[in-house]
Amino acid sequence: MKKWKTQSGHEIFQIMSGRSNVFLLTNGKTNILIDTSIPRLWNKLVKRLDYLGIKSIDYLILTHAHFDHAGNAKRIKERFKACIIVQKDEEGYLSAGDNILPRGTTLLTRAIIHFLGERLILKFRYDPCKPDFIIDSVYDLKELGFNAYLIHTPGHTSGSMSLIIDDEIAIVGDTMFGVFKWSVFPPYGENIDLMIKSWGKLLETKCLEYVPSHGTANSRVLVQKDYYKRINRMMSYKGS
Image (cartoon, rainbow, N blue to C red; front, top):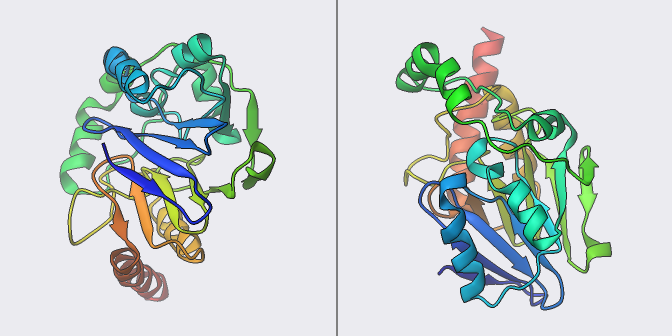
């Protein structure tokens, strides 16, 4: 089980991987779960929490409301009485148990969305859940006992969020992928230009690791390399 410890003593556990990563942030008193994976992996999620001795989850942060991130939100809320935090643009989807249909960002994923998109949306519905805290652009977690904050990083979806912990580690949802050694570019996204600008926003922090929901952590060097390549291409295209 992958684990990080920050300068403030905050511990971050990657308690689920594979279909979608799930993280637990704790300061020893308060526990925050970040995303929930898919409904069919509920039992595995509970076993991992039990393994860590987690009896309470105070807050659940959803990086966005796709089924592989929010699919177990209702169960987490019911079992642990967790307060759910989501960005305002995702509230309606979470409350309906619905998915935002993203666009493909490659030839293959564009074809998948074109031919199968509507069927996938119906297949991947999940139990609806009402959030407790709706945030806009920035949300400071100091009152919750953490040197951490949430920032709005749209692009993959309009309401995607990232969690910045101790200005060392960023948990970025699907704003980036960690599948390829040469790129952090996700295969799906509503708005590519916004997504690339969100990378720039994340690089304004001092974080050295950017931890996505799919794959492994990306280094700051890799994120910078991909960001400058794509932002220059984007600006060149707009200027032509």
